Length: 328
Ligand code: SF4
Figure: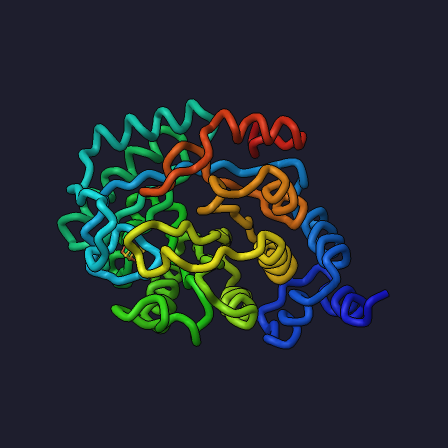
């Protein structure tokens, strides 16, 4: 048995760890692929039904014109991507989409707004959406940028179940991707969300030209948070024309699968979501991601503003793999 593997089994006997070191995480990334996948699948089976996949639907309730400069994002006002900025959606239109998502088998409805942070009058409108979506029997999730602790509490009172706020990449690489905020800002909002009693959805993006050490760094940042995020989206960069990262060399899909596996091993009870970038992934890569412990996907033809696989393709892939939506 690989030395590191023996050590892992010994040290991780069913308990959640928040003291992962970069060295340990680096060693996981460098395991022979069969050892890594075996370990990830073993952890996965101890904590989840391996055939069950949670389905979320994500809509953009306020598109474009964002004052942040995230180098991967077509919604930033800094970049010419041809995306038309739109105002905050009306409540009825959001609820119509939520009903359609529920009919298609989604159990969670995520609402994204391209803001640096919500204004209080906008937050009142979002709270009405949260309450309305919840009344349809769906779990609610929002991603609205930075929050004060009072805003987090207001969202919780409206019935928000999850708040998405990604750490994106390692602390060292963050400044190469975003200059309008710092890592500490993200951590502060995450703490407000956690303190308000809202579940945390927090992950990263790979394929942004980062090094392996940056992938180690983002997993280390997530796995050493005071509590693991309940939901960990791992995104593959969608290279959008007009953004600074449009010409980034594509990441080897095997490295992507390794990232999923290491997230699964280090955060054994978190739901790991295969998020942006699925449209460009082969069915075989997605199958490897499920084997590596991914157990959630976004469903629906649009992921905020970039394409997502058509629901039919997802359904067929899940059928071929014998996977079933959670709760069905
Ligand atoms: S990722 Fe979010 S915060 Fe960054 S530019 Fe896009 S919409 Fe704005």
